[in-house]
Length: 97
Image 1 (cartoon, rainbow, N blue to C red):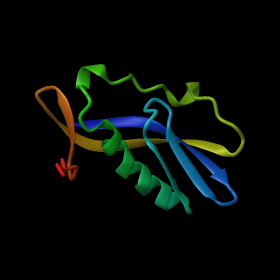
Image 2 (spheres, rainbow, N blue to C red):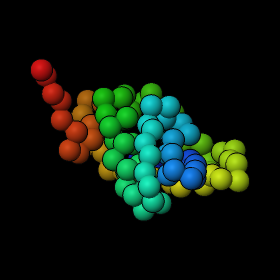
Image 3 (cartoon, helix red, strand yellow):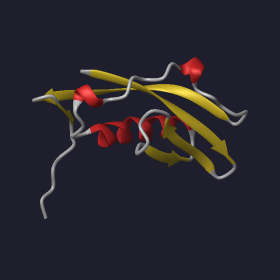
Image 4 (tube, rainbow, N blue to C red):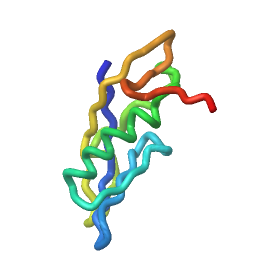
């Protein structure tokens, strides 16, 4: 299933910080906008993996997300699957060590 959440890209002199507005533990950074989008696409399924589908927050509409002059909101869509009501990311593996 496809899941979309809005990410806030904060542009700074030393790079771009990315934080998903509704998913507090989905954070990343990059040097370029293109790299930041790829990193956001990587971190979102990692943050959602193992979460119950019925407990996910509803995505906040882009126009309701407060931003500053140095920020941009970008919708990030990822493909995940659901197993017994639990989200699983493609390429996300459980490591028991």
